[in-house]
Amino acid sequence: MNKRREHANIRAIRLWHSLCPLYFPLMILKCFFGCFSPYFNIYMSAEIINVISRSRNINNIVLLIVVTIFGNLFISVMGSLLDRAYHHKTMQLDQREKVLFNDKVLSLDYSDLENTKVRQLRRKIDESGNMACGKEILLASLDAITFSIVDICLSVYLFAEMFFLMARAEFSWPIVLFCAVMIVLVVLNIWMNFYTRDKVAALSNDISDVLIEENRIDDSIDCYNMGKDVRLYRQDKLIMRIRDYSFDLHKRAYEKLYTKKYKIEAPASILSYCLQATIYIFVSLYALKEIFQIGSLVKYIGFTQRLFNAVIRLFTECGRLKYNTPFIEDYLSFLDIPELMQQGTLKIGSETLKGIKAFEIEFRNVSFQYPGSDSYVLKNVSLTIHSGARMAIVGMNGSGKTTFIKLLCRLYDPTEGQILLNGIDCREYDYQDYMSMLSVVFQDFHLFSFSLAQNVAVSEEYEKMKVERCLRMAGFSDRLSSLPNGIETPLYQDFDEEGVEISGGEAQKIALARALYKNAPLIILDEPTAALDPIAEFEIYEHFNQMIQDKTAIYISHRLSSCRFCDEIAVFDAGKIVQKGSHDTLLTEKTGKYYELWQAQAQYYV
Image 1 (cartoon, rainbow, N blue to C red):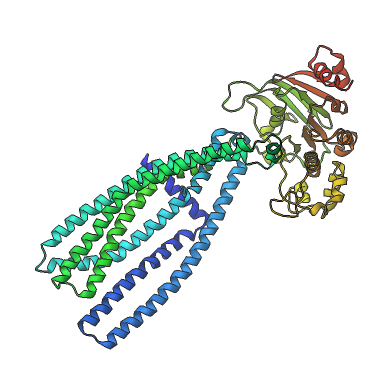
Image 2 (cartoon, one colour; image 1 turned 120 degrees about the vertical axis):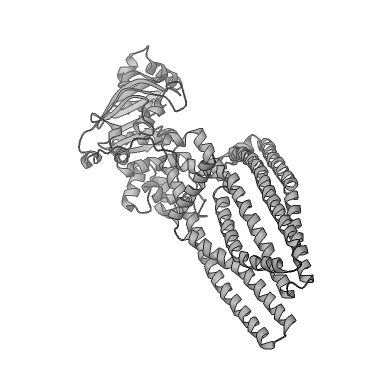
């Protein structure tokens, strides 16, 4: 266990060093000059006091003062330059580490994004950052450990000088008692700090779990779209009760943390004061016997105190690393999540991507279970999609329609069976090549708070005429003409006060325009007109063939009237395809599922 934990910390350090190679060397130099300044001042002050008390030689005093002033100036300038460089590298490391973390999130298999354990792990990592654990603690501890080592190296020489002076004196017997007492107090301080850290670590883990629960509550009620429901249904009292409960969780957790933390840390503080008092007593005793000069009293007390404090701090920070290691392991375990989705190596020809060459996608006895589930969402599904076809996927909620689309988009791979592209398992194709074949509008699509053009093109650079053409084809012409800055108008007001709010139907048209802009040979639409009014829906379907031209189109719809525009309809029920055929053909099968769904909707229009 200890080896694994040590390995986790070393791995993290190596990772961050690879991201910012100058960070740790600058940390060492910064710590050296940070430690050197107080030692230099204590030493020079002691020498000045000694000269004043011994000879009062004005030349020597002036010389020492000049050396002290210019020495401090040099140390201050170097320290400031190193601090500036170090803080710059700290920000650089933070930025590059965030990019690394975000890249990992974006590269995760879609199954991991939907995995509850993975989401909880990511939330725990975020919460550890808010609690100054994980990466922040490790870097702070490394800084403190480096500072302690430099502190010990600088003070050990002068401590040895004091020790030998005490040992050579006639009044030498207290040195044995001094060493014994100091060793006992240092060991007790180290043990107490380890004990304190372990106890505080356990409390911090409890707080982390509480904060995860609190933020989960806050996320559930802190939603922009709740404003209308809150006012119409007077949900403010319910929300306040939930917030009060969340606040109470937070309050009780931190009261427990700080109350117990105070009780735990009090003995450690007392032992620390005992250590300081012992140093003062013994060094002052030798000064009274005139073993030391009066200036050396200041020097030896300062250096001895810094030496023992540095030793205690060194062991304390090692203990801090120990209790922080589980947070580092969580951090690394997230980065270590494997990408199991087969990437493939076969290239898809450019002629296929341009829609010139015909292609065929076949589901061959495909079955699927979501990870961690024992039940099948799809079972023995076989279906062929021909190039240029117009296919509708219909069925009741939970029948497997969206899962079918997720498999087609390779967000998941089949549990059993194969999905073939031109007779070859699609897993054999280069993953990015395969994705470039697809333009998809999911029911839960997302638009960003960027400009309209950037949302359509999904890029900072775009073809203005193409963006406008795709928006017009998607039925967005009227709203586009009313926008203050045309396609340059930002959506929403998250980043720009001049951003515009758009309706659900308008957002769906923009998402449809985005799919058209990609110009992929296969367009997949999941409820493409769910948020549109009947007239807008009619206009979309009236120009549907013109929009997609010679591309292949697959879409899911609950409005069966739209299926008339399709060459073939696949009817899903309980994870299986129970019917296939055209709209007119399926309506003749009066015992079939399609007829049942059609009649259920048609009765409201009679």
